[in-house]
Length: 85
Image 1 (tube, rainbow, N blue to C red):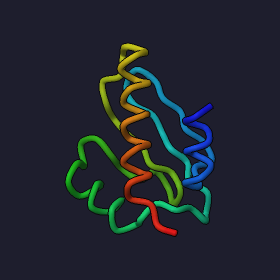
Image 2: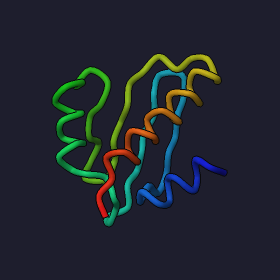
Image 3: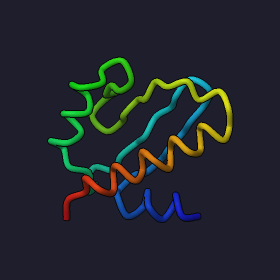
Image 4: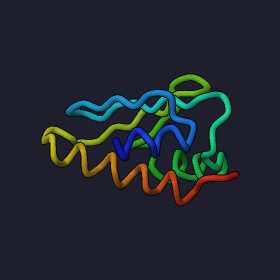
């Protein structure tokens, strides 16, 4: 429930994860700092890429469920820290 609230506040429409990564779909109006997101894409192109104008694809080894949940929580925290009004 906490993750869902975080996602709604940030303007994330959908978050899907699996063993190899997943996707985050942003609403057209979201609160993630685009400059931070571009920096993330440039610094870690092996782990993040855009899949269309509103989808962020992440590539990680998330084969264990707990690892997956922990990674998503941590990434959501980063998104929150880099949110704009």
